[in-house]
Structures are given as structure tokens and as C-alpha cells.
Image (cartoon, rainbow, N blue to C red; front, side):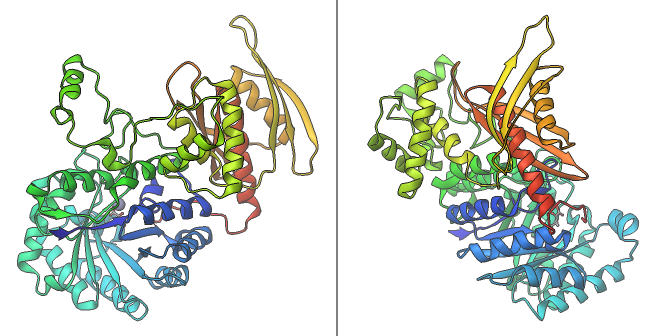
Length: 514
Ligand code: KIV
Ligand code: ZN
């Protein structure tokens, strides 16, 4: 069966999602999970965007051993040099060059004629070829580029030394028939096309990113670019899990397969959601909470008689397991350790002990601790930001006829405990005002969201916030059985990250260079 290469751009195009800003540790954590998932290629970032992004790409390049690591670059020498620096230490480096080719981009953005576009791209590919064996070239906005010019560009890229030509539907304008036809045309008309790989990169503005990428596969694409959970610029990118499962479920139709370790899909999805703060909608294909839930009586009856009546994928295929062991406050270390193994966590003895202590604490507050609780608990502190401030206690007073007030006790880096109280428009506002009084930081709350980690009245709440200070933003997460405590924890987590960024000279923030 034909192999389809998976190029994951969660850390680059995915990170271009509004409000998402991953730090280096988070990028490495996701990259290592992508390696477990078995993606072939990982686009780790855009090194020329900021010194911080360069450092993050370098950290990923050094950490990952079993995937090609890619850095994005405009078609100019400074960017190419930045990618060279960022990919030092990579086992298998690759540069991803791009230049827009569509009439709209040529006229309004680049102010270049076709000839200048060809020359600029060729110069960049030849310059990069001195340093890289593997070069991917993307004619940006290929979907809206004249087909004959796209053939010319592809021909030039092959002659100049590109090893992959990627066809981006940058603005999500294509439909499957048209997009498939681009690949067919390139295959039929460009000399030596069989010497390179063709790749599809789709955006979901019209909800057709996955369908378009599948059409590309049917017409000869060797590689699909996408992100976990389909996150990305605007409406997002092709969701990798959807491509992998479409191919795995319908080999009879597509005759193509990825080599992904499908059992890692659910875990990868959860990690990306957690670290980016982008909640996966319940009805999201493959990884949504409802993707394997059956509500109607007729469906439930069918499921009980024979699962395949209403299920085309077994949840087990993507690494979802039904909970067999119910854990609670009477459970011991043995059952807890078994559960960790069952959920796919390989922890050192010390980490098991710390997790067990946290579990016991949670079990005291919550009757049954289910798989989601354990995952949330373990993944909450996956990334350790230096803790400048730590929440000690919190007290809130609320009545629908009175002004909400809150007091907090917070320990600072020097070990001093400071207590402050404040009022606010609501309980969360009062808590945040009290925290601001302690820290004396002036920050803007850009985003606040809350979700329940599991079901039931005693479910844990997970709060995600984005704070902004002088054009630098940082996200924070907080988890607790009480949503006000979770809110306070998320705010303090984000503050600690902001302070961390301020301290590091090469702090990374997204720059819109594309
Ligand atoms: O969507 C796009 O065109 C891109 C390119 C940089 C490949 O992300
Ligand atoms: Zn893109």
C-alpha cells in the first residue's frame, strides 16, 4: 500500500492560532509526543521570527531523534541562515522555503512580476541547497495560482534542488475536485515530477481541509501537512488524526496508509489541547468527547447487539480505553500504578509517589477519580515554569445582593507570604484584583475559559487564561475541584510565565511575518 508521509505543523502553523503561544519546554513536550505518534516530519517553528523561536526550534531539533525536523523560512538569505542555526544538532534537518505565487499576492503583497517570483525563489533554493539536502518549497497561495504558472514554478523548484514541493491552499478556497486537479496537472505536465515528493497543505476556511487533502492523495500527493486537532491560522489546518483515520478506515478506497502509531492519537490530542489551551469541540471528528458516544435509544440498542452497527472505528484504535478500575480514596498505590500504566504513563518512582499523593488529595474531595481526572492531574504540571508566586490560600465571599470580595495569601520567590483582599464585579474579578495587589503587576486579561475535566457535580474544573503585558502574552492553566481556585491558579500560572518571559532576553513571541 502507498505510504503517505505526515508532516506535522502543530508547532508552526498550529501555533499561529490566535491566543496560542507555546514556550520552548511546551514545544519540546509536544514534539516528543509527536515522535511517539510516529509523524514523519515535524515543522518546529519559524526561526527568523524571533530569537526565542529560533531557540525553541533548536531545542526540538536536539530532542527529537526519529523524525525530520523542519524550520520555516521566507525566500531570503537571513531567514535561511536562521534555519541553519536553529537546526544545528538535528538528526535529519530540512528547510521549508516559501514564496507567494498567486496573482493577488504577487500584485498586492510582493509587488513582483512572475519572472521576479521565479528568480527570487530559485535564488533562495540554490542558496539553501549549499547547506541542506532536504528542501521543501511552497508556492504560497498555490490554490489561487494560475495552473500553468504553478507548473513553471514546480519545474523551477525541481531544477534548483527542492526535494518536496508543497501545494498550499493558504486561504482555504479550494474544493476537493479543483484541488485534486492541481496534483493531477502537475503529475502529468512537470518534467521529472517523479523525482520529488508532492505535498498538500490545506486550510479549513470552508470546512474542506481534510476533504481537499484526501483529494490530493487520490491524485498523487505523497505527503499531507496538518496539525493535531486541526488547530492553526484562522479556521485551522487539516487535522492529522482525520487523515490518518480516513486512510486507516477506508484502505479499500484510498489504497494508501500512514505509518502513524494510531494508539497515540487520543493522548496527542489531549496534550496539544492542554498546552495550547484550545479546547477540542465535543463533536470534533475522531478526538471529540462525543466521537464515540451514543445517545439515541435505537443506536444504543444497535451498539449492544453489534458495535459495528453504529461505530466505524473502535475507540481502542486511537488509544481510548474504557475505564475498568474505579479509583477512589480507598484505592492503594498498586491500583493507582496499574492505572497509570493502563493510561500510557511511564513515570519514575519519585513521580509516581508525587502523583499518588496528589491523587489521594483529590480522592478526598471527589468520590470517584476517573481517567480524565488522572490525566488532567498528571498533565497539569507537565511543564514546570519557575514559580515566582505560589497560591497558599484563597477566600471568597459572594452573594447576589452584595459586592463580591476575595482575599488571597500568596508566597513569593523570597518565601514571604503576602495577603491582600479586594472587591470586584464578580468573584473571579475580585480574586484577580487581589492577586494584582499582591504582585503589583499590571496585566490585561485577554482570554478566560473554563471546562469540566470529567462528569458529575464534583468534577474538576480546568481554567485557561491568557494574560498580556507590554505586547507579551502568556497563557496559564489551573485545575481544581473548585472553579474559583482553578481560576486563581491559572492566573498565577500565567503571571509566572510572563515574568519568566520578561527575564529571558530571547523571549519568544509570535511575529506576523507571513
Ligand atoms: O498556508 C500556507 O500557505 C503556509 C505556508 C507557509 C506553507 O502555511
Ligand atoms: Zn498554512
